[in-house]
Length: 258
Length: 328
Image (cartoon, rainbow over all chains, first blue to last red; front, side):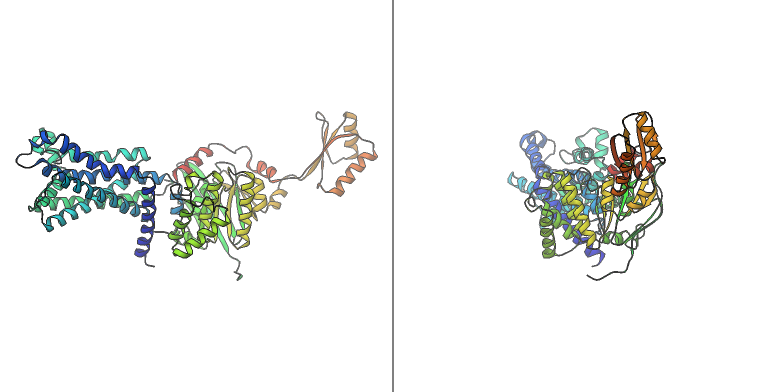
């Protein structure tokens, strides 16, 4: 067996283990899957009338849905952080470390399992938005571009969240650190345009990574060209993914005695 | 069964490990021949768990060399991992999986194939009397059941060398005996066992060789018989009715040590029936009244206490506990 096929086989075994955990204790998965739908109901159904006045010219649901989709991805990254931190407290991890298996398979299993969960949440959010009146103009190309960008972002944020989970001292700490990531879309163009924000916050909103991603997603789903925003978003995603992956690997492989 | 050439299963030379400025292992040397049981005996904090963690590739050493199954633990950890199984002091089962799923997880990670993995899982459930609990989550198991599942998981891959870190700590007497039987049957099948324990009778019953670890060093190593010979031999204690009796007895038995206050006389003896009968016969002949009579054979407790002195349970305890927590 080559090292790569061995790593794939071990990761698949670990993925089965994680999915079984998720099915057995579904509360964490369910909450991260339905949170974006609740946001959608809140921002469209409850605040939509007032907020819609600030976006100028478009239906508010058309403006906010890409933001909510992004928040689905951002809130989905909470669960791998907590799941990894909880897992690290389990005695069985020490056993895995003394077995002849691919070292990274445990983390890969978490990442793939969590990505599946986040992408389910994302699809449900889109379906809920469509049911509430969201009418994107995108053609096939726009949809594929949007889907590709979201998968890439999910991959990047999930690896980053795994690193945060490994870094945390315990499950409680792990549930705090991703809060920052979950909060970031609010300080971007997810809910209202940055133009409407105070100067300092506006400056932050323009340069933080979620803004170009939301803009790119919005344009792709509107059937408009998203060239510059898409390029910046892909660059951010690749950067975060590389940092998250290398950092996770390093944290997991550190000698537990040092 | 094919006979394999005699070979060293574990070879340790000058192994050193410190956590911060606390030295836990201070130059450990020993060899464990294949197919034998080696027991590392020591008080809490002596460094037993640290030794197991280094030999099982969980943590790195600071100095020295260790070869397990002929592979260097630092240079070829995966080679070592292919040959070993580890059951630590803290339960290494997945609480969110059932007993059977835990075993199948191991089989999958060892790539035994679907049918073979399930066959071994079911055979182990049978062997460890866990068939009824097979479908329940491991988190609902009692301590003894968890330990059994833990060992069963270690055995899925049929390792040649098994590390058992205090395997019977916290078990009831029946489970302890079952564990001892299991160790014996594994050794009969050619497996090498590295066992740490704080229980002297456990080392005495199971181990071919015993190493006494104290303050990061092996203060003694040998068979249980050899170790027992290292401390003052067996004796008989006689308690006499009064000072006159003590004087009379001391005259008859000149090689003895007397304690005037307790009115006792300690007489060297091998504890055998013949010599005891002779001893009592001589006292009878002199009409000396003996109130109380007890026979003491040296046991590993004497060895342990003599060798580990009163340094047992010092600051090392805390360090070792932190160690265990950190390596979860």
